[in-house]
Length: 192
Image (cartoon, rainbow, N blue to C red; front, top):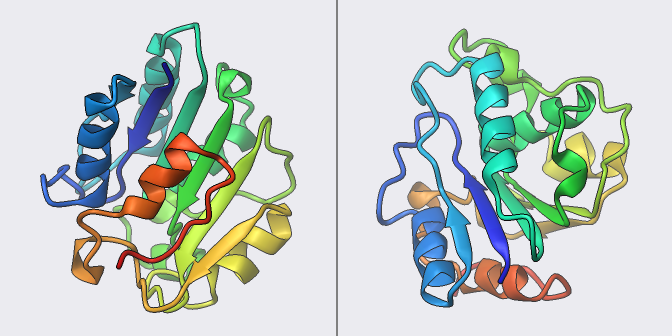
């Protein structure tokens, strides 16, 4: 059994049609342990509160089997802040998928999420980390590979026409991300 922690982004109230909800349901149906929490105040999140929640949820994951984190949008940045601060429990995670992190140029003018802008990218991940983003993500106009993937030295999948990999971009079900959950070597592709 693998334990999955799925983390949503800003203004996400975990709608049932979102790929994260779909993924949580599929993984649970396959017998895996799945944690998909509603993080506090998703419309006006507090970074320190979300970091505390991340630490709490990581600590509650089962001790046996693999541990996998999937973080979308602001939670992808949450993970970067956690690694930069060397929060406890990060080294116990076997692999991480960061999905569509927004850039500082988009977040800085938004007081609700400005503090989530990525920290200095001068740290090393405690375990295998992969990045996936759309080539036309309006929340990262610089491009995720340029903004995050290359500076962090992590494998990056850039998906054509996938925008922010959210419901607005048509990402309800997303079979490729389920495939990656079950096989870390699986190619992450756009949804059909």
